[in-house]
Length: 148
Image 1 (tube, rainbow, N blue to C red):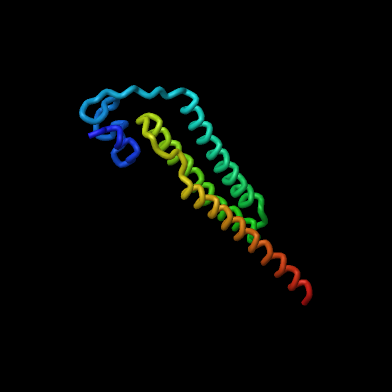
Image 2: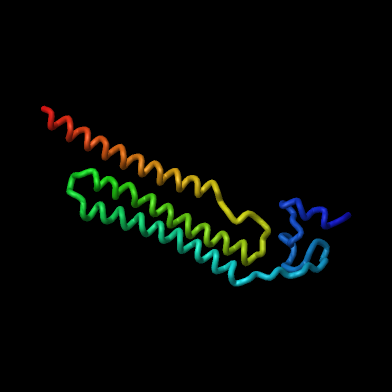
């Protein structure tokens, strides 16, 4: 039985999911993998970029709610941006911790999560479309009320 033949089967990979780190199947020793500091720093840098986006969106939402005319659609803009920015923050934290776990455990796996990123991009697009619809509705109602 060739134990390296299972290396490409990711359910029972030869990096030691079922055995202590550094030990392959049936106690065969494996070479330790070196993790460079730049990998940790890249993970932290990506986390900070996502948090920056979240804080920027939350700041825009707060500014729209605080400085907008009471009863105007700008309050709705701010209310829509707040949960979207919260989702961005949760995604950033989840992705950072998930990647940190992969780095620390030296797991050979994908480092990206395209489904959640697609969900975030879709929620931002929906929020912007909602805001555009509110603005068009406000402009049209003001335009048609001026004709009467």
